[in-house]
Image (cartoon, rainbow, N blue to C red):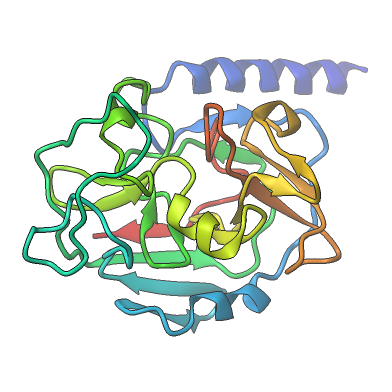
Length: 257
């Protein structure tokens, strides 16, 4: 009994320390529930990234290393007007306004675990890239800027495929990548976060997933077409936090740019 009380005390102290930290790589959860020890294998899904222009990957030990120029393969008002992919905004947002940035080629490398599993200590996602979609465009988290600024106003600058570029021209998706769900379906595999866990669309079977159906990291374990035996995965939802919640479920690899 003394040992149990001592362990509980340590966990409470660790939780308090983590909640006071503003470091983007800090622990955000000292999980008191039993950790899922299942080790998953994402190698079967890697072929989804084959033959994507501007994107390459290779397996290096226990990691898959992606290199992307991060150029979307769809139209947008954020392309230079001389680019054949330029298209004026024709979406449905009556409050849409264009930000001053234009899409520019990038050089982003993501080193992602091939065998993801739940992390004992969860880490926050940072601003900037947190994963990669199947067309080579990076995912961002649910914040518009430091101090957890909400996307409320920034959403009004998303193009007709629900992405936009930041100041350096780095195009990205914070919410559903509409071009991909229109092309592959609302239940499709859409990409990977940096911890190796897959991202799927908002539909599972005939059910549209909402954040209430997911855990605090915005995922759950269930079977998918690609993983019929089940896998932890994130789901895109129409409601905040859209893609990811309180941090990575697994241990993220590295992202450099």
